[in-house]
Every structure is written in structure tokens, then in C-alpha cells.
Image (cartoon, rainbow, N blue to C red):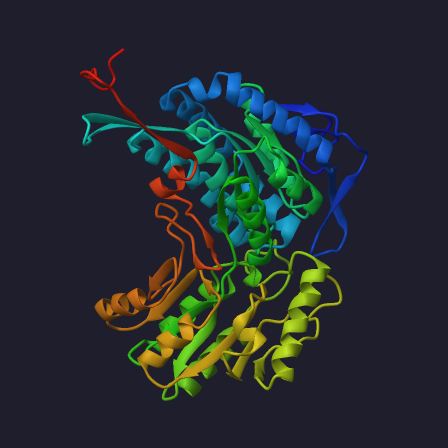
Length: 491
């Protein structure tokens, strides 16, 4: 392999656990969202590379040692990876910031440190997981064995690249699967650096491949008959297509898709504390987060007070160089994303919503920046209230009473996340139970990566994190025997 010392340039692809020449001379240039200048370059995988990686993964799963090791032996390798990764968390955060413009503080805490923590949490789950258990059945004692699902194709987006690789890679490895990972073309550098770390722990040949590429590579991976399961994070539109293809093949699939989360501010909430917390909950990662609380639901009685407080908070945000620790909002990942978000801001104004703060003009001459924008006088049938914008845009919606607030929160194609803000936590739990969302916060919204994460409705199928996330990578086999079974663990 030829690579730069700062993990910015690669000549080879990581196929079957080795650096190998790509099948074509196509290259992906990685562009800084802040400077608009190239910062790296990697090979672009093509379908022939996918065929090679899947064939190796199939061979490794069907005939190799990896799925036949004990869970403890596989977890020992993951522990080695966690130790290697821990030495490079700060540098990984820097690389992610340079690749996709995430503010340095978020790249460190919300991405690189989160990815490192997921490895340890995955190991803790694996140690307690019921790999083998006994139950009493109608015909006698039944042994339940949780076996690896097979060859996994994992497709991950650009917005939190390491954070979304880990809940696919780590449980797949612990379960005994082999895996082909396709990172987004915008953020291949962090994934190939992870490949270098995987090389250090010397997994058996064929267990892991990492292939940066575009939609053609992703679709080829999804359609490949040698792949047993697809794990995808991305848009609901892409998720529907993947689900349809997997349905045709009866292929296992888990999908973590879009969101349009509602933050319900009840009349007894402390407005100052609530708005302070929504700075992160609504605008994390420059607004490029599927769980961002972007619909702010407020009663008629407290509407103006909340809008004024949100406007003051958003007017005070520091927008600029994402490497600056003081930066709150950096650039969006690509020029097309900048233009997309600006289009939503124009749409909101055209449909009659009022821009309180921000606008569709670029705040800088260089870099793919968007002004943090707050809308008031919006309706829930507007595009800015119904569609996932993926930028620093918040929309305030009025409600008449609590039942109306819950109705508006549920009036969405999505059901990924949500929150309620109140002085009464017990009542907040009642509100949470009435909202159709996979994860919910009372007086906060942060992902707890030890608990199951996923969505209702068009926000996905399946769960990541925790025992439920590991269960996505196993098949359940029930065995009934005529005669007494030996004790569990006996040879």
C-alpha cells in the first residue's frame, strides 16, 4: 500500500483484509468544505471490486475460521482494535473535521470518542449476550443457538462517518459475520484509516473489506447474491429502494433512516434552560443529524417568548472555521448540500413562514456555509416542517393545547426521535409514550449509545446499539433432541 503519513492519500483499496490494487483507475478527491480545496485522494471502488470483496467474505464465512471461533475469541480481536483506536482519537477527530466540516468539539465528542466508546459497549453486550440457552418446549428441552447472519454489506453516510460505521462493524464482528463496508464518497479518509487499524489486529483473510464508492457500488453490494444482510444508514428514499431489493431476495436488512423530530415545549418548561439545550439538540453537527430536534412546538401563550429566546441564541452562534474550538456551526459537507439547504430556506419564505434569524444568502465568500436560520409563523404542512433539511434550520410551530402538540408531533412521515421540555418529568414520560418515535428525551436530547436506537414509520427498520443491535447480526436456531441434552458448555 502507498499512503501519506497523515492518512490523506491512498493508492490501494482494503479488500479481504489486505491492501489491493483497485479494478479501475477512478479516483475520489476529498474537498475541504471550509476552504473548497482538495485535502486528499483515494481510489474509487467499482462493482468488480465489490465482487472480489464479497467473494472473499463468502469464502471466509463459509470455510474460514472467523465464524467458528468462540465469541470470546472474536471479542479479543475487537479489544485489540479498541486499544489501537484509543491512541488516535484526537487525530481521527481532526480528520473528520477536515473531511466534512463538523466543528472540532463535535468531531471529538460526538464522533471519534463516541466511536471508541461503542467498541467497549459492544464488548460489554457481547459478554452478556445469550449465545446459547435452553428452554423447555412442548416436545422436551430446546437448545437455542444464536449464529452469525453471514456476509454483511454495510453502507454508511458522510455526516457522522465513524459513529455510523461502528454499530455495524463491531456487532457484525462479535457475532462472527464477515463484512464489506462502503463509506460515502465524501468521507473515505477516516474509513481507510480505520482499515489501517484493522490491518494491525490481523483478522483472518476476507473478514473485512472497506470500499469507498458511489451509488453504483452501493447498489451492486445490495443486489449481490453473496451478501446475506444489508445494514444501511441514510435517507428514507434510499432506504425504501434498498428495502425493496432486499425484499425481492428475502435478504436480511436493517435501516436507520431520516427524521424530522419535534421538540415539544410545555408551558411549565424553563425557557432559558430549554433553549440552551436546543442549541445542541437542534443544531448539532451543523444541523446535519437525523435526530436533530428541528420542529419546535410551542403553545400560543409562550410562543413569542420562545421565539425571542431562540433568536437570541441563534444570533449568537459562532459560524466559521470548524477547526476553531469556539465554532458552533461550520460549513456543510458539499456545495450541493449548501444549495439544497438554501433552497429550503427560500421555500419556507415563499410558503409564508417568517424568517426571524438568518436567510438564504451565504455568510462567507469561501466555504459551503449556510446562515443558521429560524422560522416562525410556520405550518406543519410546509416543506420546512415536513422534509428533512439537514442544515442549521429550526422551524417554530404553534399548538393550542397538549393534545394538539402531540398531534402535530405525530403528523409526520418520520418517527426517529423527539423530546419534551417540562418541569414535571413524570408528565414528560406520559407525553413521550404518546409520540410515535424510536428514541425520546425529557428535558434533553442526546443519544444513549448503550440503548437501542432506531425509528418508527419511514425512519427505519431494526435497531442499533445494545443487545438489540447485536441481535440484528445473528440468526436464531432452535434444536430439539430425543434424549437428555448434556449441560451447557459441556464438550
